[in-house]
Image (tube, rainbow, N blue to C red; front, side, top):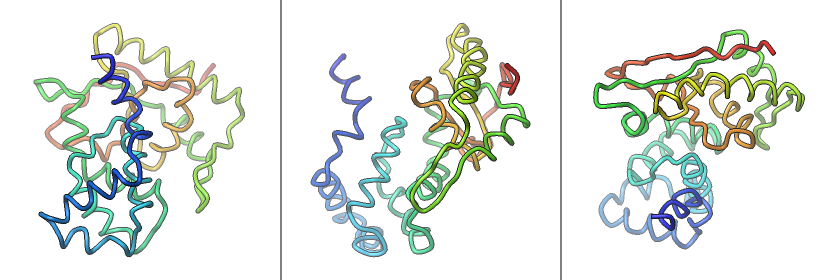
Length: 209
């Protein structure tokens, strides 16, 4: 069990270029149009590997590889940004992601961010072709993580997964901002919540110290 957990947590490091090619070749045997429409153009195996690693880093299963590659094929001709492409894929995998965290009554327990804090984060990061960069000061980052920690305790004490629900535009930035302080925090966007899911908000994270 421990070995399985270690493999799950480090799946992104385990997914090599050869392993990615093997997965793609297996998919090509059953869905040739999906693969041929994406590889080697507009994306290479290396670029697909990068997207899959980002998904795995956040514990998103890549078993629906056909759907993932199909989504990449829909958007890769317009953008090569791995962060943006990953968000498109996560949106397409909304039911898979949502089902993982909601209960049998289709309830998803979360904490949310105050609109003022969302605006502050939105203004505090830069997304360029070179990647995503947090421009907030270390003090602001630490305070934000402390405020999130206070609220997600309400989830933990109730036996729920620590989830923060944010707007799609800042989901990747919030994950980047919290990954060192709160590595186990699940950051979901409203795009990843299906219509049949009931959101239960147990706390609101403010930008106050």
